[in-house]
Amino acid sequence: MIKIAVYGKGGIGKSTTVSNLAAAFADKGLKVMQIGCDPKADSTSSLHGQDKIETVLELIRKYGKALELDQMVKIGYKGIVCVEAGGPTPGLGCAGRGIIAALDKLKEKGAYETYQPDVVLYDVLGDVVCGGFSMPMRGGYADKVFIITSGENMAIHAAANIAVALENFQGRGYASLGGIILNRRDVKDEDKKVSELADDIHSKIIGTLSRSTTVTDAEDLGKTVIEAYPDSEMASEYRKLAEDVLAACEE
Image: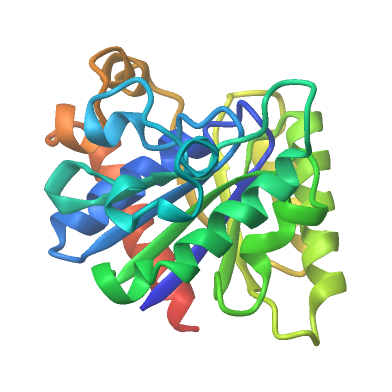
């Protein structure tokens, strides 16, 4: 089982990228589980055709100890197991602790043993890397972390912070950094800025994605690019990225 956590600043295209990676893996015949660890709880929406599904935290509040595993998942495109951790009621509680509670519940209910995924993807908000937001980096969860960034200054700043957090966790059995994914925004000197970031954090750019209206067109249909436009150039880019991510996980 390959366990991958994908981090990045909010709005960087992280969930879109992760969902297309999940679809590309599923197209290869792999069994995939995607766990959204963002309080917005919309990570998996393009995989199952619904705007929202009930989150693990919502279900814990509703059913308590009576909650069953099959209530926490939604089966999406080509059998992808979709889960949304969720967040607290606005103004009440900590989103990071919510992620801890949700991942602990999945583990308690034997999610990984039941569904036996070949690939597990954790889609994690990376504006802050503390408490529960660092949970997928911990031993027993992800093996590799990939950081998505553009050449925008705030995205690069967030990416650098994620890398520093990961470096501080080394030696504790936490995940290692697999590389950077450049999701282009076509800003000035984008390639140079992201290359400098990769050098600074002693990593590398393992894949790039073009800025394309195909992505938003697919989102308008409530689908991934892989499903909606399988013959498009963007679908090819996501498939190549999937291959590159798998290769990086083997290093």
